[in-house]
Image (cartoon, rainbow, N blue to C red; front, top):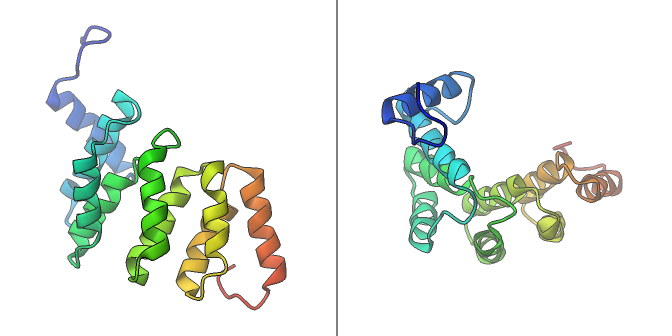
Length: 170
């Protein structure tokens, strides 16, 4: 038995992660090892609290997100997808990048990441993406607003849906 507050041995953590992955956590592109790697990062962040990511880790995850190799892209996405409402500094960087990103693929990932944070602070940024000329960007923004835990975000998504019945992503 592990005493309360004691760090978990790596084998215990890995068996718990495997169990967690078994229920569908993470994305597996090269078998369970990819999902486990992503899950371990998330557990590390959740167990130590917010603001655990350093600027270097954030920059590396962004670099991975820009990689054309899908597995590396997913690893970067997973490393960024642990950000919470308490990590405003990094989320604001994602918002600023989203506004100037030329690649639709990366912009869509940034919109998804910002939406996953589910913070009222960033609802206006997602609403702004509803007027983006790129259909995929609008679709990502709409989908994240429509499933938000915040009534304001869901109301904005519903207003958009009613005002734009021609969209095909509802």
